[in-house]
Image (tube, rainbow, N blue to C red; front, side):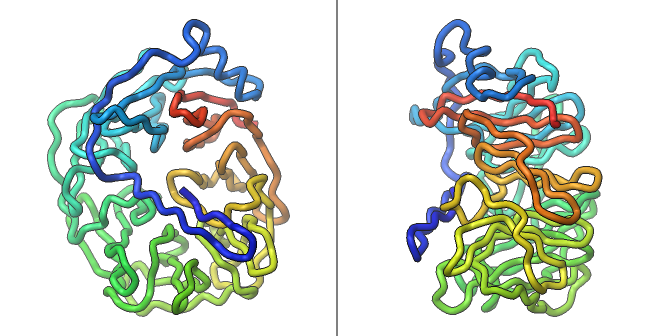
Length: 358
């Protein structure tokens, strides 16, 4: 969930997607016969293909949830709902159950022939063969509480950067080479840090921090990934901010000031004056979470999925809307050629669709 702007104040809605356990029962597709075509038409984007027909997935206690995470790996789309991980061909075909985890899956990584999936421990992941089968354990040097906003993987898919702690003054930041087992604490627990997303950029790990009793983050810091002291990165304007991603030169964040509505901004990796690049249609949202806002770098542009919009941010200048959908979206995966989205009608009738990227 995101932070909602309400008048001059903010209400914080925090949902940790991982925790508890689930089952995986499915109920009949919503809308009966023809539901598969109906969702493509409802979304209102030409060329939409339904990969997974509309379905309601019930957990162990008959609770329904939206699809929590998508990843495209080669010619397959992987998606997680409750404690189950599925795969479906990118260009259509039968859905396959790949793995059932011990906890709800809010984050996972498909890495070559292996998939890393949460388990019921705060300091390890299950390593699952991509084709399915028995899992082994990957033990982390410290627990990251299975929070999808607390952990990212380097572009070369070798190193995890993650945050431990769940409360003010308890946050610490780590790096961990998951193949060699080499680990390093980059910043011990102390006064810096918060529960917002973290971003990797040009040899630094960027994170935000609350100031005093502030409810939302107004300060930006970075730590060298090779170790060293944290340094403040001054962003002029006093933004309440939540990091969304980065490119070769800049950071992107969702933010607002005391006198402005929320928007997406770009700022130099060294700080300075932030440039507003797009004002989302959901003006009341000020911050992002890594499951609901997907930031992807494509040749010379950033593509961001947020709510029912997909935005394009060029290397300079304002952004624009690439796709605008009429159906509810819970999460995205974006490739060089396609947008894959998980739909949710508000009653947890969900599907997976593919749309050619303009």
